[in-house]
Image (cartoon, rainbow, N blue to C red):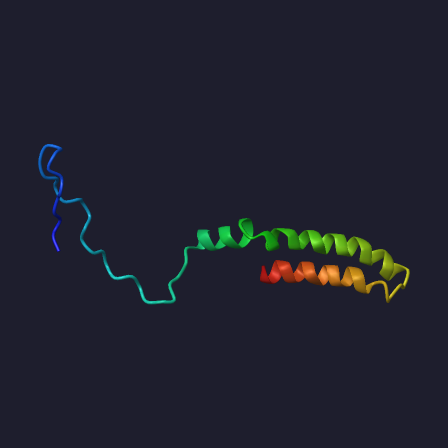
Length: 92
């Protein structure tokens, strides 16, 4: 297939656009991602990774007084909060 200009009113045929050759073959999958991209996606563009530590801190603020006062059953609520924050940070 060759480049063919269909323009008859603009002053003549156009030259073929630059860079129409095929590039090199891509490497086989799985491809190694650049470290900067991986860090950016993992730490700054992942809302779960950024919010998870906040859940852990808030859960611990509620859990520590309950542990000190030996309130074991109500400790489940902040315990789930801490567990959710750790999970969001780990798997986010």
